[in-house]
Image (cartoon, rainbow, N blue to C red; front, side, top):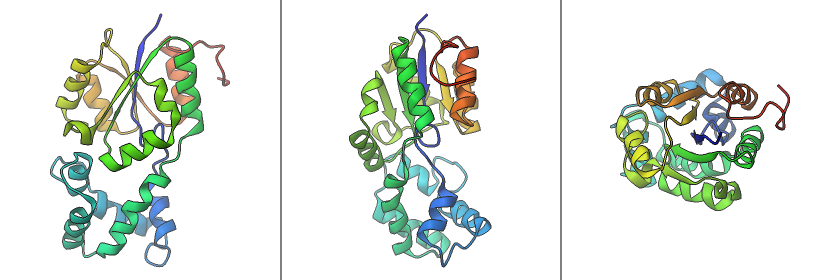
Length: 215
């Protein structure tokens, strides 16, 4: 029977490896994973709706003032922060195994949606560069609605906008988003790998055992 499946994007459909990206962009300042973790913690912070990067995801601050704000808080160079922000969109490459799952779910008659924390510029880039977005019925980017996971209002907005039939399956790689979805009555799958998600979808009767990909 056809079901509704909601995908997170960054870290699920698209690669998101900030520690790798920081070491690639700043090899002289970020020389190892420990230093990359320190930079990442300062730039991206732990989630809070008033945190600098959360404001970016919410669409209430532009890159230049965001760089100024983070630089003032951390002492990192404003130019380095802008360089990082410019290089995030090309870093967000599709994860082939997840894209395969999207095609398979669509081919088997399921309705697909996405729910993503994403600044508007990055969102526009992803939609423009990836034609598989046509396989989604609808989707919500945080910057477009000024709401953000894991807060409950963005799940309520999705519920109100989409013709969901009961509790959708929700795939995300962040535990607090998984917890929020469960509280909203959705059926969450914590993303680790495409193969692990495939097995979970088979277990929920969302994917035929004989579909592409071995179990």
